[in-house]
Amino acid sequence: MSYNKARDNLVKMYLESLEEDKIPWEQPWTVDAPKNAVSDNKYNGINNLILSYVANKRGYKDNRWCTFKQMKKNHWHFKENAKGQGVWIEFWSKYNIKTKKIILFSEYEKLISNNPELADDYKTICKNQVVFNADLIDGIPKEVIKSEAINQSKYITNIIKNIAVSYKEEGNEAYYNPKLDEIHIPKSSQFKDEYSYYATQLHELSHATGHPSRLNRDIINTFGSEEYAKEELRAEISSSFMMQKLKLNYDENHYNEHKSYIRNWIDILKNQPAELFKAIKDSDEIVNYLDKNGVSKDKKMEEQNQMLNPKNIEQEEIDYEK
Image (tube, rainbow, N blue to C red; front, side, top):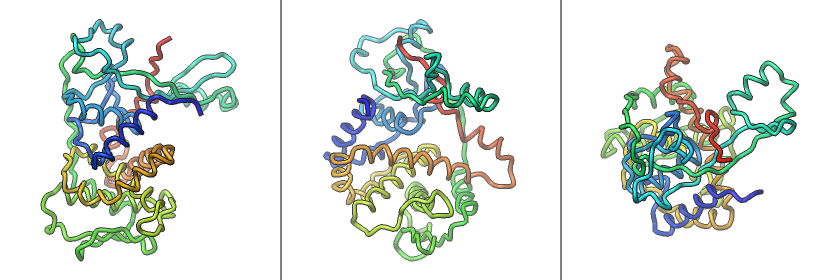
């Protein structure tokens, strides 16, 4: 496998954070999920985690990012403090092995739907690119904050109903029982605030997606084992993505509930760094699955998906430096 700067840097950042007893994907998020300053499309998966982590670490207030080429094209300029502040991310695209041309995923899908026999002419490629935060750029227009109001309680209730998991609020523990396909959490009145309540629901719902009737992951593991820690990694990252989507701000108490896994996660990242990217890939699938089911079945799905599912930047833009 070729060297990937974006992934290598993410592992280094995460190890550094975990060794400081911090959970990196639970750092306070920026105001919104990171997005491209030109296309307005949101970054997801690995790119979301990288850019959210860096924005928090450096104290950026703007959630927009762009490449140097995009800056030049729009006649924007660096501020004095921008030197060395670029961040490596991934761009995925389709490459024609005969014509040597790169095309967008959206173009590829349209092409193959009309000409399926051309599928063998293409392969998926990944290139790393450097992007810069809008806080470092002069001349960029002021950000227009778009309202994306989501009724958090109704959204989560829809998920519980639509994925048909048994859900009980009773007792003093929060857990998902994969054998019975049951989620148990304490009563909502026992949580100190809405954040803690919703975060717990989303964490256990993320586990529940692993059931054979849903995304079918291996989730029946012994507590404290490496495989158990890997599943916790998936639930933590995917629930953090969901909380970002619902604009729920990070709370340190949530971190304290999961810090017992830090040692396991350090070992996984040091010895099996590829596991982090498998977890992120699975987390993207979990988020897409939960998000799809966060919509009431009696509403127009297409209308809701347009609001809740912005296009994927990795599939919509190619801006490679030649």
